[in-house]
Amino acid sequence: MIIDTHVHFGSSLNFNLKKKTVLLAMEKYNVSKAIVSNCQSAEYDHNQVIIPDKKQVPMISSAKAAIDFAKDNPEKIYAAIWVKPHQELPSAELEYLIKVNLDYVKAIKFHPYHSAISFEDPRIENYIQLAQTYDLPVITHTASDICSKCEHVYNMAKRFPKVRFVMAHLGLGTDNEEAIEMCAELPNLYGDTAWVPAEKAIKFIDKCGNHKLMFGSDMPIDGLDTYSENGCGQPSMYREYFNGLETKLSSEDYEKLMWKNATSFFKL
Picture: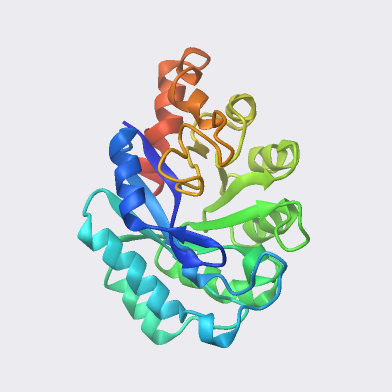
C-alpha cells in the first residue's frame, strides 16, 4: 500500500492541477489514499505579490471544494484545509464545516510563502488553536525563504505541544539537515518526503525514529507521471521511493514510511 500525504488540486497562479489527474495518477502508480489540499487558497503569487481580489477564492469555497473531492472519493481522498491567514480569520462557518466533516477533513494546511506571512505570526495561532480544538494535525510548507523557515515551525511546535506539526519538504531548497535535527528534538514535530531525496529520508528515520516521516510528493505538480518523471522529462526522485528504497530500509521501516505512519497519524 502507498499513501501520499502531500497532494494538490485546483487552478491558481500558473497551476492547473486537475482532480482527474490526481485520480488517474493514483490508479497508475497504485497509490491507495491521498491527503489533498486546494491550491486556490494561495493569497500571494510566486513573487509574493498579492493576487488580485477578482482572482482570490474565499477560504470557505476552497475548503468546500476539497471536502467535496473527498466525499466524491470516499476512503481514497481526504482533505487538508488550506487556510488564508493573511486575509481571513477562522470563521464560525469554517469551524462548523470542519466539525461536521471530520470523516473527510484530516489536517489544516499552511503555505507561508503563498500567504506572505511568517509561520510565527500571531494570525497563524488562530488556526493552530482551531486545529487543537478538533485534534487535527497542522501541515505547513517549509523552505529557505523568510516566511517558511523551519525554525518558525519548531518554535510554534514548542508553544503548542498538544498539536502535531508536519514540516512539509523538510526545508525545501536546503540540505534538510536543520529540519531533521528539529524533528528529532520535539515529539510533536513530523516530516514528509515532498522533494526530499531518499538518502535524506533514510537519515531522518535513523535520527528521528521510524514513526515520524510520511511519504508525500506534491503530486500532480509535474503532471500525471509526477511519481516517475520531473517537469523536464527526467527521472523523478520518487522512483527510488517506489522501487529501490525498500532494499535500503527494513520492511517495517519502509511500510511505516509509505503508509503505516500516515494511517495512524491522520486516523485514516
